[in-house]
Image (cartoon, rainbow, N blue to C red):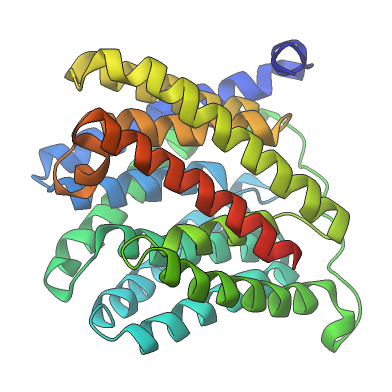
Length: 334
């Protein structure tokens, strides 16, 4: 399977350039957030914003990509505000999360731009739960999102815009039908039902990290259009999670949080996310999980405190993430 990824055709080295540019853009965002004096939650939020700006924006033209990138903060900032303001109101927070899920999937009816904005909205709400964001943190988080999206845009449209030399990509026709006959409407309903069930069960399993079950269920729905695709994607997610937890620890634990080796490993894992995404969802998930494992073992402050303490705690957390990924798959299929 790994041989297939490495040997997969890469016409014009498009995947290589895509991945290399992502490392550069996310690295620049991290440096800018550091120079701005942001705390770890701000840096994490900014890094995610830069990653999504470089990964999810896929309009047919460079101009369209620039417009979508400019719209990302317009979606992310209000979602951050809602997530933080509802931090101490669990019922309202959960209902708002499900509304973001439904809107994010339904937005796919407007093509690549709707898809990008929907994913950005969901991940912004997700990271607010991960960071336990509160209203007092909002100014810093807003700034981190804006600076990181600007940094990613500077690399993508200024420093390294290789798409200008490529022909426009084909844009699929918008989904036909009305009501539940339209695939995006039907999937929005399914996504809300699946993530709602995952949210309830996730909170019963872990009152602190319930959002991982919601995230696992959401990502199984992304870029799928049938039950078969959902099943295959869910299986590949679980397989990638298993491999990522195992190998991520083997690589990250010996580093023991040393800054330079940790930064190198994170850069390699980010490169892997972008390089493998087009050919293998399993290996992309492996790289995603590995990135989290390396960052967690590095002991990066309060945010990763659960994963950064003694080794057995790290192992238990890894098993928890695997359990939640498997649970997300099973809840989706149900």
